[in-house]
Image (cartoon, rainbow over all chains, first blue to last red; front, side, top):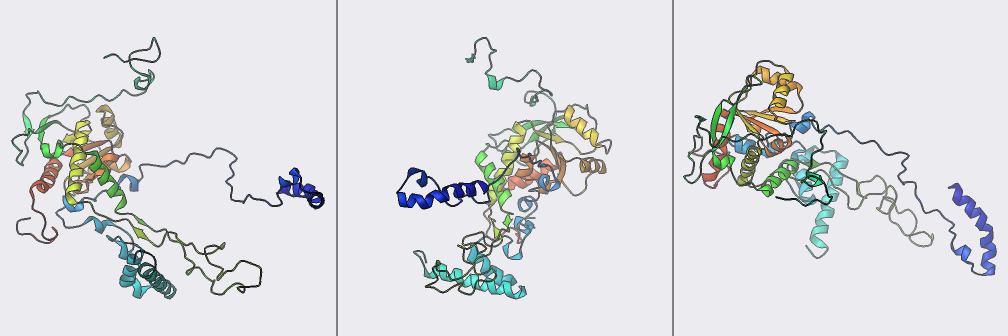
Length: 136
Length: 287
């Protein structure tokens, strides 16, 4: 930041005189603004390696009971093992399908603002899929 | 066979196959499978074996003492433990196990959901600035995201049942052929000490991690206590067997009952009818 300001101060005076004198190649190289943002990653040292424990309880028991159907007399299905929102267990679909399913299953116990946003999004996606574009 | 080495005066092996002389820990030697021995077979397969195939033979071991030699030879069904190894099916089943349970909760607000932004910030013409309709459009800092992740997404899908069954058979076959499968008569150990199990694994060269499988919900207390304190040694019931756990753990230990259970469950799919309705509803000939 300080470097660009001093540069601007040095060449600022020249700029005003340079316009009247005509183009000089020195003036074409200057810029009166900063192009870098503050988001550049700055590293003062090589970062430390992250130590991942590959044998935690969750990682060592991952996938157990996935074959509960074929090995367990089909009393349960692997989709019963999935933990998550009610409207997504054992279901896959694109956004409109997921949202309409959520409205059917959980809509009456949602908060007001969430339900309003859900209805707006459903109507937006419905119009988008069925009225605009080549595929409708 | 002569191997041409780029450097003159080196030993026959190329550089990437030569072991360094100061390597700690002897490389694993595979045991010879009991093909030509005259030992009596301690367990025969209950299911019928096709006429053109012979049963696969392995050693039967015991966990009672560290230095006990194998107790004998057992027969394993070739259609479960000697199937052609299809790595693509194994990969497909492993990827399925990772993804079908996955629900990603990533969600960002669109311009309609971000608070504010109902009013037009300045008039359309005359102010000299670019025209805008709301301060929360995706162009603005602090505005909504146009095409971001929306809501909890599920990645659920099911592979055909026979593909999953074949994946299990292929995993068992690979463990057997790579000498990582051990059949044990029962899971009784003399002490509930974790060091005893680790000593046994080191002595018998079972590898770093062991998966112990038995049928039923009751396990001997000694082995439960020993495995409770160890991270890399895990014990699961036979219903919980799956390809991911078999690939994660280096070695697999099955009891004789577990072998019988797995053979019965996995061989049924070779000669069943296609389901007219899901198997969880009652069938007259299924138990």
